[in-house]
Amino acid sequence: MSKFKMSNGTEGMLRGQAPSSAPDAFQKVDPSMPKRSSYDTEFERQAVKPQKTHAASTGFTSQCAGLSMDSVMEQAISDKLNQTMQQGMEDGFNARMELEAQNPKPVTDEMIDKAQDATNCDDDDLEALRARRREQMKALHDKKLKYQALGHGSYDEIAEDEFLKTVTASERAVVHFYHKNFEKCKIMDMHLLKCAKKFFGTRFVKLDSEKAPFFVEKLRIKTLPCAVVFNDGIAKGKQLGFDGLGGDEFETVQLAWRIKEWEGIEEDFGPEDTELFKN
Image 1 (cartoon, one colour):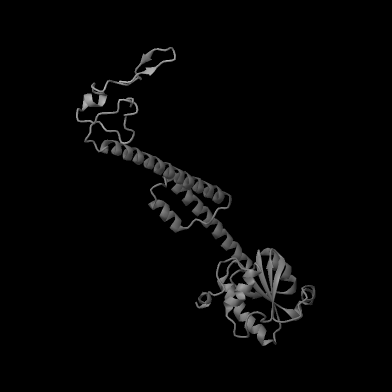
Image 2: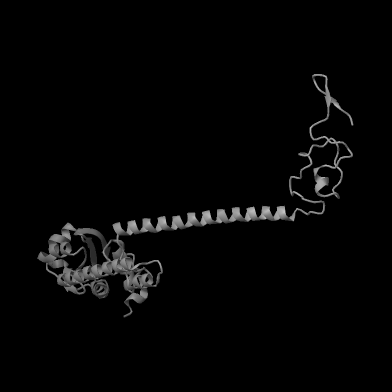
């Protein structure tokens, strides 16, 4: 076997180098293993991936170990994503609860029924919902009594000296300035009567324009019929004649929608809800 020469002039074999006749570490374990080069170190002879313990090995064990590690990593990533999503859902829910606490929405019987069926709603949360529902029902009842006392739900005629009290006592009011001999004023009366019965949150009244010269002048009413919409005592809009309603045979919902656009109606509906006035 060839020797190498040291810097000090001595000779010796490479570390790990063995005589060709001597079996290496692999051959000691498995004599069927091929004979290694005499110049290979034992470290160089080690398999990297997959590692074999004998000549017939396929590396299956190492591959399984690798797959197992991949599976663990995928599960860890999945768990982290689920945790992040769950935290996001909780944060969103808490933010919504804080927002609703600042601007409480009406609690309905349907909401309470869903809360009863939910597995994550405890008794305290359910009772809090019921308490809010009772408070809102009481407030709604008190409001209804107030509206009734102010004449909501009816379509009455008022005198000029009742005008200011009428438009300031109710949050929303519509005053129809009419003339007794104008047929179009009678058509407007018919539609406003329907609105008065349907939209309880608004006070609907009519005022004879000939008997209210002061307010006719102040509000600059020059066309009849004229329905003036008030919100908190402030005139928000005027329906002059049938402008924008499409002629004498317009649907009541068209007039109602124009009044709502001027903040004159509290209730929710759409401009196409023609069935609203069928009953």
